[in-house]
Image (cartoon, rainbow, N blue to C red):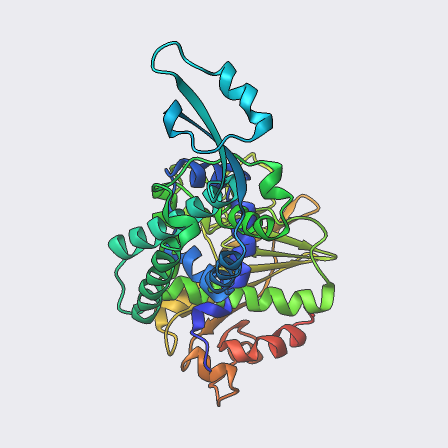
Length: 395
């Protein structure tokens, strides 16, 4: 079965979002009901089988839900007491009322009203609310199939909410996290899924910003970046330290989220959407531009040299694309021993020539290397990235 091209980058985007979204804030928003789930995160959950796994877990719990014994006290008339156990007789006498000879009738019953079931009902309500919200505000012809999947998942969870052990609770029932939830192996698994789910709940403005990543050109940029990262990681191992990423701010637009990502490997640094500022006199800028401020898609920093890759979501490069690459090559400087020097070794376009799915199958791809003629500017397609990185002695 062919994967939609966005599914190739979803696992990596999920790892980035772990660092971008502030810890704990998402869970607080999930419990309070104020936050929202972005369509991007819905796609991530769906691709990882989150909804299927939770549905199977609830079906399993429905066969043996949590129960507890509840004491029931009811005021009744003396003649309504049909049976009094001998050791309860004194209790009934002590509870006798002066008027009407009324008693507290004491009994026990088994109930489904437990913290575990209340939590599970809340979790299902949260998912239903998020899916209804996504279907209300998100329209896309490109993701028509995924939106139909969301409608199917919504129907499934509405059906689960009507199960006997959940249907007697009102919408979004209050619950407290107790040992009865965290120490029960089955419900503890559902609680861990809730923490994972709540960790990606954001404010409404953040949700809109994250959804903007679903534009085709952005997905292609990320696809190229993560493909380069995967090739480098296969040779250099995992980064030495956690990536340097922006933190999601309440007012942060999408462009601020998807820039200045830095991964430091042993002897090599990889940047996504690195901001290269314009030169300012009397400053000690390490990397700067002698022209305007620039922001190439991918920058690899190895030793004293910079290698620039720019993703173009089109079938063939245009003259403006070549001018942009020459600007990167000619305008960017790096300080070496305090002196600014030209240190861009190659500026390369990655063009989506044919559908990405065809490239993944190894189709015939057009490749042009103008840097062979010492121009140091050229374009390739994603399927050639590994060979290019080897040829440039990056890996």
